[in-house]
Length: 133
Image 1 (cartoon, helix red, strand yellow):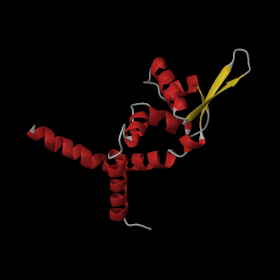
Image 2 (image 1 turned 120 degrees about the horizontal axis):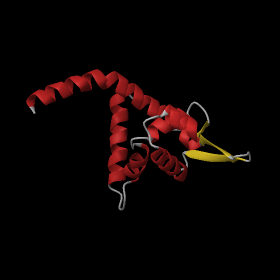
Image 3 (image 1 turned 135 degrees about the horizontal axis):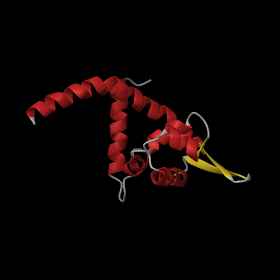
């Protein structure tokens, strides 16, 4: 198993290789999609299990219905979320993570953990920066 420095060097090499490709950078393309304001919240909300549209809206209350619809469509398009329609009156729709969507839970969890651990240092840095700026 690699140590943290070796792992960081590996990731840096992969980032550099992706950045050198002709055309759009695949890493940026993916990060633009999953790193937007709502995608991570919706993926982590769906990590607990399938949800109907209104359940998602209640659990992420500050998202507009329009943005919830658009983000779910974007996540569907990328293969991270699937939409299931049930033949009921009225029809009910449920959203759930695909296998690809489930594969994001651990990396997102690591990012969440890093953010929780780093927030005091970030807050301190912001205060110091704002005093100088």
